[in-house]
Image (cartoon, rainbow, N blue to C red; front, top):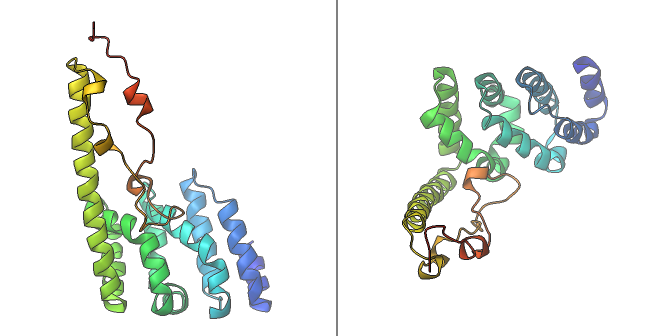
Length: 220
């Protein structure tokens, strides 16, 4: 099947776009070994792609990269990061003019794998990718790093605030006497919802649930 698809892309480069979209549509997110096979196919496609079609296939590609690097299975992450070892792919799809699109899409999961992953190969590959982007676009890397740090600090403050509110509720303080507004989470406007980690997406909701909460210890 890989051979057949490569024959199509070699004869007509424009077929890279529908093939990439099809791969994303039917991506086996719950099956790690099949994901590795799909990533092999992605590399075959990207290895034959020309710059003219990179923009059209970019949305599907970035979603695949983001979700694959976030994977909990080390082989999926490892295979994804190995894509950056292909000079043709890096030159035409990941670096140069494409860095400003690719790096924001992968920065958060890449940073997490770089700091927290248990597998040394994954950590080394993540470090190589990070090093590449520090060289290619150091200013963008610093900007994303600053935003990432600020977001983590904000999440920590919100978690502490939530814990404080629930502690007060459990101790019998009426909800009407608590300030919920400062505990609201709003989506960070600097991030694109299509590619952002679930953990990095701020929850935009209402205080109705908490305001209507009836504490069983409140006898008034």
